[in-house]
Amino acid sequence: MKSTHIYLLTAFALFVILGLPALANAGKAEISLDNNDRNGDGKISIKEWKKKKKIFEGIDANEDGYLSLKELRARFGETADETPTATPLTTKMDAVVPISTIDDETLCGIGRSKTCSIKVAIKLGMFETGLRPKFPKGLNCRDIDEQWAISYTHKRNRENYHGGIDMPAPYGTPMIAAADGTVVSVERGEKSYRGKEIILRHTPEQTGIPGYWIYTQYAHFNVMPEYMVGDKVKIGENLGPTGNSGIGRSGMQSGKRRPAIHFAVWFTKSPNYALTHGKLIPVKGQWMDPNALYRAKPPFDSYSLRDLPKSQKKIPIPVMTEDGKFIPANTKLIWPYACKG
Ligand SMILES: [Zn+2]
Image (tube, rainbow, N blue to C red; front, side, top):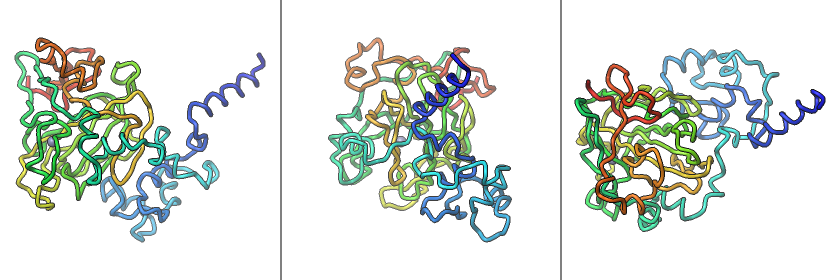
């Protein structure tokens, strides 16, 4: 085969894999603009900015309180010629699909908006399975105080269940990435029970679980994690400090909640997801009891997990110690808090 043929074949393969060829060309500046410009006015205000104010000021060359594409390009050392001028907004991330393509069951069951019946979330796995963590001997790890899918009906004024597990920890304790992954959502959560939160997406290679795409959610940060959508993270990386952000039953940031991580997990066989009103909806996503992630093999659905024999319900948890050691050494998954040695 001639080399030009190989080149064309490679280009075509890339086109097929990426689906959205513009993404391959989109500069960092355009991606940053797409990811941060929520109201779609073509610039980033300080309110829309997710990283430090100091960084914002460093980019805002004309000091008008907004970051323009030109200023972002200057920051990333890009020129306009290198990038197409009309990058569609859909090229934010290669796995993002329009929310209109999500089926009603997934949208309701994962999104859990007030207009949706909680029965749909239950159908997608939001019920108790009886799994419990078993930490390595001799280590002091942060245990769950509010278990997966316990009733939150008394907290929410309507039928509801806990969509994750909570581990209490002192203010400032680093929440750590459960696996290698990519930041796919960063939310201030000013009207959310979960408060400041971040969601990571993990490929099958990153978790060592073939055929499954996994999402991990970390919530109740004390301050906003200094990440932007698209950032890559490594297993054990410090995502940000524990706090108690999130509204209480009154609808106000209560401040009464104990500091803790809220850790949630979704799984799907699709690599794609949609974003809507600050929520991430994996295509054909289902709820996972977060303990099940550490089994590192299917089944992950709550029906099968509930039916496991009692002897298999204590899940050995791989962890990182506070001095950065992984137990077991080759693990691709860890508990979202480090253990004391
Ligand atoms: Zn929680």
